[in-house]
Length: 140
Image (tube, rainbow, N blue to C red):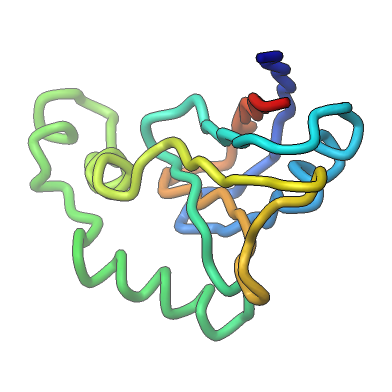
């Protein structure tokens, strides 16, 4: 069973920015000869996550509000206290809960996402940076 791996970067601004990467995943899948299997999407960072959402402005705003309420940005997090100059303890905690990887099945060389489902990167950090994404396709 072949396994193909693709890497790309996304420039993010942090502060719960959401970036849709569905088309990039679809393009990589379309460039393969694999017809059915699974695609794993992985973000190589401890302050960012990958997830599926209905990608519309209201849910983008609601997602930021939900995370701000669940795990607020505060200097009291021990990561910040024990590491002078750090201010992103909340970013790490949010990412730990949301997770860095996602697996999506595909058939006929098409992702089996629902009508409104989109794959996005959610950047919890407190500053802009480039995020590395790994897309791995396995199937036949």
